[in-house]
Length: 136
Image (cartoon, rainbow, N blue to C red):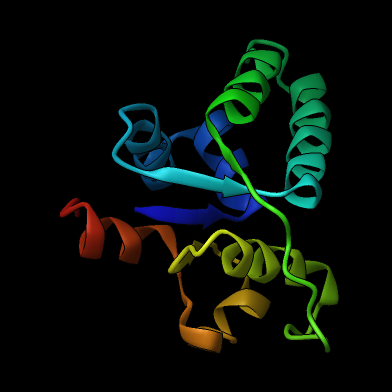
């Protein structure tokens, strides 16, 4: 299954575990494919670096390398108009469209508000885990 993971979910998974951590584990176990674009990758790397400074015990280089080597890099679809209330979130919608991902996993309200746009389900980690991985 192809999914797009918002930066907040990735950071939560890497640094704090919890439900987002189960999604990262499923990806590592090759049960999921992470769709990435140049734009989403740049944001991931930037935020991983900043959190890595605050939490030096986490090897952010390793996770960034894993994302680059195992993520499915696609071209973003150019959107004609802003989709989300925060246009910076549109890059995740563009990635999902470009990579034929049916789901964006996020905790971001602006993204959650546009669930259903062009058939993309946008849901929080807990809902994704229950619906697609049968994890409560």
